[in-house]
Length: 231
Image (cartoon, rainbow, N blue to C red; front, side, top):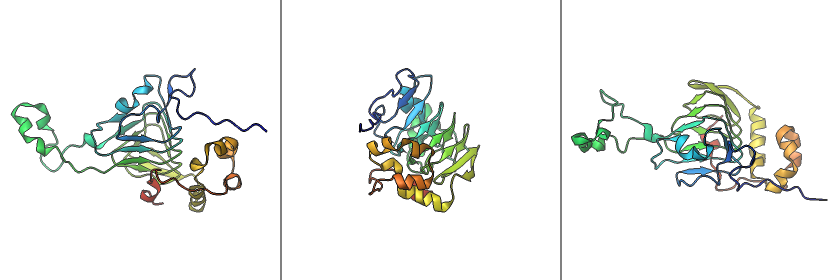
């Protein structure tokens, strides 16, 4: 029996005939962005510039962490903490960046309190031109509707939409979500995923349990959105 051959997570263009689709992990060089295997971005207009065109105001130290097997539609944007302005005085205008003697007051805009890292779980689908605000945590298996502006955390397997995005529904019951998180198919060995693609894409949770390798578990380097997005 011929073993199934997994796809290659190290190529930038997984579909050479469609250069608009790029895998992000082999593309990203910024130490402030972490992306898991097979997460991709789709854009007809220079998708390779994702780190600068789609991750905005990213001056650090906060990170953007995206899990494995995430699908990012055209125009998805992540707004980072560098976009913050002071809101505790009469004006929000950042006078010091205009230069001249105003720059002597740069301490007024440095060290603004942020919301921490922006963390996206595994197997998250982002619709066309959705936007994620600073410090948001999005759980595994979530769906972000097109045009949404995500300002709050999204639970595992939640579907959100709107501006600001609201929870529309959860894809599964709490009990079934617990089963899915325990199975964590995204952590299965790649050859095993390859062998069970049809079950992962269209099977039941029972089917997924039957297909699971004997020993499963989350890798220590995986992003931890589940603990921050209580259901």
